[in-house]
Amino acid sequence: MSDTREAMLALGRAARAAARRLALAPTARKNDALGAMAADIRKAAASIAAENAAETEAARDKGVKESFLDRLLLTAPRIEAMAQGLEDLAALPDPVGAVMSEWTRPNGMRIARVRVPIGVIGIVFESRPNVAADAGALCMKSGNAAILRGGSDGFRSATAIVGCLQRGLRAAGLPETAIQAVPTVDRDAVGMMLEGLGGAIDVLVPRGGKSLVARVQAEARVPVFSHLEGICHVYVDRAADLEMAKKIVLNAKMRRTGICGAAETLLVDRAGGATQLRPLIRTLVEAGCEVRGDAEAQAADARVRPATEEDWSTEYLAPIISLRVVNGLEQAMEHIARYGSQHTDAIVTEDAATAERFLREVDSAIVLRNASTQFADGGEFGFGAELGIATGKLHARGPIGLEQLTTFKYQVRGTGQTRP
Image (cartoon, rainbow, N blue to C red; front, side, top):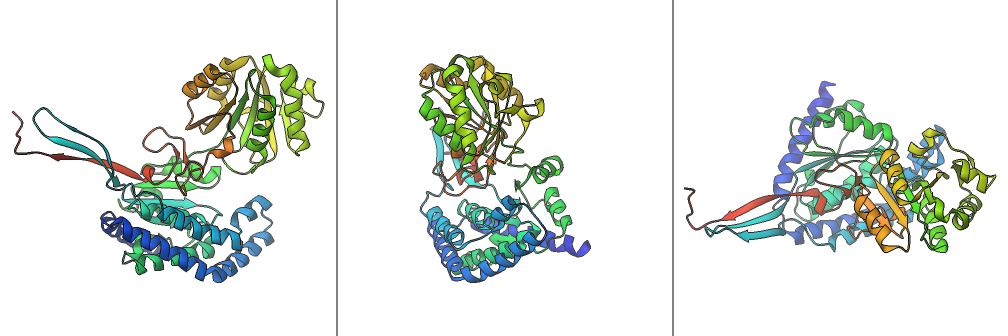
């Protein structure tokens, strides 16, 4: 324990020192580092794939779920996507130093609110080794140092990826310790990160299952950007275009069932149910989705299984959806407020006034009109890669991209003013 603690504290000190240097690094140098990282990942693709293949096989031998294996697996296209993602990030504007607003006071003082890096970001993630590339690069481009702690199943893959990132930093003349991987799978290391590593960590971002996120939220002594669950809804209004609704509902649920932006509950307006309910259920069932519904949904299609109270607050992450028939917009919004997780919720309607009420009144990080909930993604928002989705209300909310990894300070320029 003492050896782990000393190693972790040293990691934190190195990250803090690197963050001070990185905060002042010019954009061109950071972009050079991203290009060098991408090149190194492509060069090391075979060795990364070999490490990952061994870890994937070991996980398969343990009998883990196929969905877990899919998240762990790094295929050649996925490795190339990591490299391409770094190059895409280099093409995005650097938020550091951007003037958010400025004004002049009556006494002549000029005040500007300017974006600056947060400092040191700790990322604790499970199973997805590609998170190491996304997270490390996002932190670096936004002027922050990153401490990455991946899960034991993908430890060697993530460590190999971080090695590429560090070589890219070195090639660009930036400190390698700006991106570091925790060198142990010792669970005590996570506890030390939750404590803040002696004041070294400014913010924690958990990426993984509910148990990991719940632990971080409960035990962290530093701010956390996270979401616990993605209980996302699609409400099909009476004024919805049925063909559009079927397409959106099917995509929102079935495109990728295991992501946090997948729809878990479908709400259908009773006023449109006579024409909408059966076709929506049929579309889902024929695509291989199990539908658990209320009495009206069951009456509309015998293949609908009874929904329990627990279903309304369940994140399935599987081809299962709960379905409730509601009395219009008001009851739909009441259901979302009661059972939702303030992640992502969508309305399908051709009624502009109804849509605007939904967008204004539903208190979720992301609200959409006539679009799939699976657009809850920083890349789809034009942010490049993302660290995840945050549902808190302070600082970052929604996709965590470059801007969300900055804070701000006030720069005040005077000409000798003193306060009377």
